[in-house]
Image (cartoon, rainbow over all chains, first blue to last red):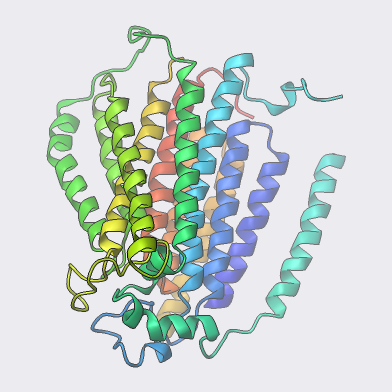
Amino acid sequence: MVYVALITGFVLILMGLYGALTNRNILRIIVSFTISSTGTNLVLIAVGYMSGRTAPILDEAVNVADAAARIIDPVPQALVLTAIVIGLGVTALMLTYAYKLYETKRTLDISKYTDLKW
Amino acid sequence: MTKKFVVLLLLAGLSSMFVGLLLGYSPDTALNHTARYYADNTVADTGAANIVTAIIVTYRGLDTLGEVTVLFLTATIVALILSQARQPGGVGSRKAVAAGELLQTGSRLLVPLILLFGAYVFVNGHLTPGGGFQGGAIVASATLLMLLTDPFRRFSHRLISVLESISGVLFVVIGVLGLVLAGGFLDNRILPLGAFGSLFSAGAIPVIYTLIGLKVGAEFSSMMASLSEAED
Amino acid sequence: MSTIMFAMSLLLAVAMVGSAYVALQGKSLSIAVLAAGAVSLFASVMFLILAAPDVAMTEAAIGSGLTTFLFFFVLGRVRGAKDD
């Protein structure tokens, strides 16, 4: 099961990168970045999983005494929580810049913005 | 055509690296050293039942402070960039239709329930899965429902920014109080640890997470209000 | 019990890759944005199977809800641009 999640995560990262490098519409590039970051989070969580164990929350299912033998690693989950929230912030910023770019030239095709090319 | 070929070459190199990582991966059978420390000492140190919450708020609280700062910066930049596109009082250029009766009545029923559920999620962050970020996102969904129902309503940005600033300042004040009264910055032992598993336990973790939830909810709401009010 | 989990995770993996393919090659931009929201939703269920309930809740609320709405707000403002 862990291998299924790992392979899916890697495939999502590669598909997102391919979409970001070959599309010309700016909004499609942003969608591809979103898919790629979802794949990265999936890989991180899949690494921290151990089979036969449960989530790192101590309630009536898991006693406090034998917690070290029954729960999985809690650190990747804390990291991925931060990553998901900051991913939303970056997506909002990218969308704002795309909207401002659209206002200057009225087109969403990235090959039309040649101001910085030499 | 050569551009696609170069892209495929790059992806082939990357995927060979991934295959190498995949073949060399073997799942663990026992917790590593750091995780075993967290599993054994979380209840004794902080009194929280949710270990992920204890890590985010106390053990690695400085990272959470940095993340809240990044979100604040993002909301400010979005509001700043989009405010230059807005014409003052330009409501007439919008061609939006008013929402139907079903949506208006339904949202009047649902918005208080969603706000209550969001508050429940971030107050109970130390006992069950949940916490400030999830509760803040749920509160922002309530704002979104209000935006969808009534597109001409102008949200008072002053209320949202006052709420966000007060939450941020109180968060840092509690951190400094931890420095003065207890072990270090953002230590949660400034309030008594209480009985394990009850609502008023785990010291200052519910207070900190409530403030984070309010701040994150206000920031997401401000981002969405800025995006929806930007004129054409 | 674990074969059911394995079958579910396999089904979710196929659904995720299929939705990502639709998001990249979809004809209109609205379909691509909705497919990206579907990828996030299936990833949230996969997080639950991998024993991470906090992360599943966060991904469902933020990745599947707020990101899709942000995209649709901007899509509503850029009418008249050509697709791809």
